[in-house]
Image (cartoon, rainbow, N blue to C red; front, side):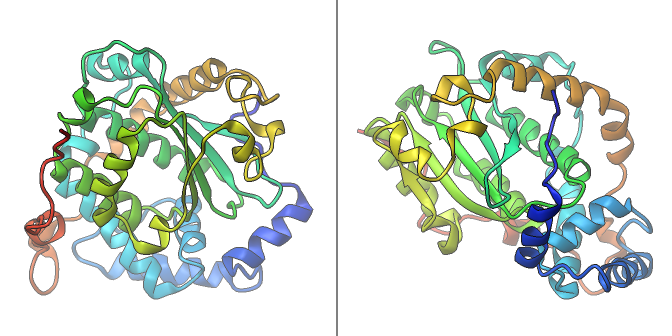
Amino acid sequence: MSLLIQPSPELQIHIRKELNEDVNTRDSDLQAIKDWLQKQPHLPDTWDEVRIMNFLRGCKFSLEKCKKKLDMYFTMRSAIPEFFTNRDISRPELQEIAKIGQGPPLPGLTPDGKRVTIMRAVTKDFETPNIADAMKIALMIGDIRLAAEEVGVAGDVYILDASVASVNHFSKITPTIVKKFLVCVQEAYPVKVKEVHIVNASPIVDTIINWVKPFIKEKIRNRIHIHADLESLYKFVPKEILPEEYGGTAGKMADFSDQWLKKLAEYTSWFKEQENIKADESKRPGKPTNYEDLFGLDGSFRQLTID
């Protein structure tokens, strides 16, 4: 079973159009970013080409946007140790998360070349884990995909299964950690979020969405769909690529999840090496990044309170 099925040659043509990718100029764009990296005193001198190319794709080949995003990516690695250190899936606290939740990207692509990831909890009764560890695993998967998406995809679709969302779990989540995660996803990773689908939603979900909304770019806010049933989901994501648990025919969530856990384990030494490949603020030209400005919360964000 393939971890991520790559797009067919026909689909690749569509995806390249979507990403503004020109096969004749992409290598010189890549070279331009590599030269730029080497000149930045506060950033690593080199990094791997496949990943840089996927940053270019996620920025529609705008060199300026790509530089900004790569700088932010390496800046996050220094700024948020709770996401970017100890990234070893065999650690007990990460094993704990793997037991209660699943968040695998699915192998198949939508007909227009988008990658779909489903996130859900597999058990109803559990102690609220340290949410930073769940976010850490999601970003670890993101780092693997930076290499595993060999030719790029037309965007990302997230299906969030809210069946276990409860007041109890959400009351333990601080606005700061949510903001840190969303800054990473929106500013530091070359992810194009095209759709977010929420299934099995209870009334509390509206409250949670309203609470998170200020952290999310408006463009993405308008792409959140709450589904009353799975039928309406199939209009966006065909059954052929969905797992059996969601009425699909592509296989089982547990198998997809196990495959990704194996892949995360294979990457253990890569994650270890990457811990030191990060921005060094003491060498940044001009003034160093003020983390408070990045993650600070203005007065409108409060701890989520649900009556």
